[in-house]
Image (cartoon, rainbow, N blue to C red; front, side):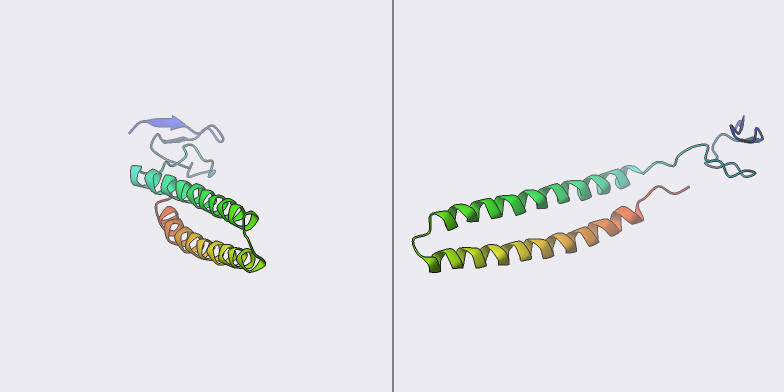
Length: 110
C-alpha cells in the first residue's frame, strides 16, 4: 500500500482509496465487476430487442391492414395490433424492472 498525494488538498492518502478522507475529493472511480458488466449489457440489449419487436410487429400489421379485403378485417388487424403492443409493453416493463434491479444491485460501490 503506497501513499499518494491528493490532487485537491495535497494530503497523503492510500493509493487504493476512492475518496480523500480529509476533503472528500474523488481520487479513483469504482468499477463494475465482470458480472455487473454482463448484467448491464443484458439490460441494454433487452431494451434494444424490445424496441425492435415493437417496430417489427407494427410494421407487419400495417401490411395486413393495407391488404385487407373488408373493413372488419382491417378493424380486427388494428385491434390485434393494439393488443400485441400492449402485451409487448407489459413484458418490456416487467423485464426492465427485473433486470434493472440486477443492474442496481451490481452497481460499482466505493
